[in-house]
Amino acid sequence: MRRNAETGPKLRMTRQRRALLKAVQQATGHPTADDIYRIVRRWLPHISLGTVYRNLEILSRHGIVHKIELGSTQRRFDAKRPSHYHVRCLGCGRVEDVDIRPQARLERAARSATNYKITGHRLEFLGLCGRCGTTDEQVRKGAERGEAKQAGA
Amino acid sequence: MRRNAETGPKLRMTRQRRALLKAVQQATGHPTADDIYRIVRRWLPHISLGTVYRNLEILSRHGIVHKIELGSTQRRFDAKRPSHYHVRCLGCGRVEDVDIRPQARLERAARSATNYKITGHRLEFLGLCGRCGTTDEQVRKGAERGEAKQAGA
DNA sequence: CTAGATGCAAACTGTTTGCTCCGGT
DNA sequence: ACCGGAGCAAACAGTTTGCATCTAG
Image (cartoon, rainbow over all chains, first blue to last red; front, top):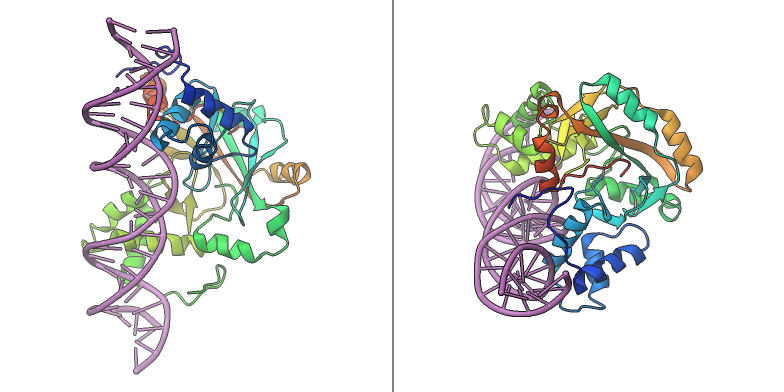
């Protein structure tokens, strides 16, 4: 099943596709596939998780939603927006946007430091959110769960 | 089994632990747990994958090896070295180091842009390695496999 | 009408864990 | 001798896939 990533076969706008899109857009933060599944089931109780994954994948391939693959093994998605960076709370795992403009200079630097054709970059900050930052307890819990804690990975 | 992430109980230097360490250090690039498993079995044919994971986790908790969790859902490890950045080839998936010093300014910027206690960051570049950069074919393959391709995730 | 999409369930991959026996210190 | 560690297998979480059936265009 050869398929060109850019143009692909024609997409059909099905009920579930529309619902998925709506869910991703209305979801605050950066929902996981499962979060989205739960939301969409409010409108389409019989939608299957497979459909959610399939569509999230397709939509992200078409640049309509954005797939986030950083830290942890679980993916998160968000409505496609201009590139931006994220913070991940080491305590509770939540992910939020960081309002810093993408630094083209980083890619320039990487370009001259490697022999790769650099096409992009991902930057994620690690730390403690307001809620978790006060207790500190969760950091250890996080560390025990195996969440990374050092910089510059 | 409460366990302090920083100090922990005393570590025992077992045969398999030593082998694991050796494997991580001698492995070129950034091996996955499974790569390491294969290497170590050359010396300890009966070591179990569980042991590999357990130790990699422990060693990384103690800052002896470095766990990389970026892109893809599979983890990679390397011998602990000063923090550094990585490039991931969108064609073949290989991961290499990028020789750029960690940018403290990024964390400073994130600190003022959020209300998180920022403790670190991870930066990964995406692109095509020398081998894949020429064909371009693999990019589409990568896209089909679902590898991300846009920046600033 | 028909290629593409869905639902469902089974399969997979990578990782974690319970348990019992083993071996560093 | 003690207690952390090893081996093994079963359990998990997240994601993917095969197949028969449906549906948007």
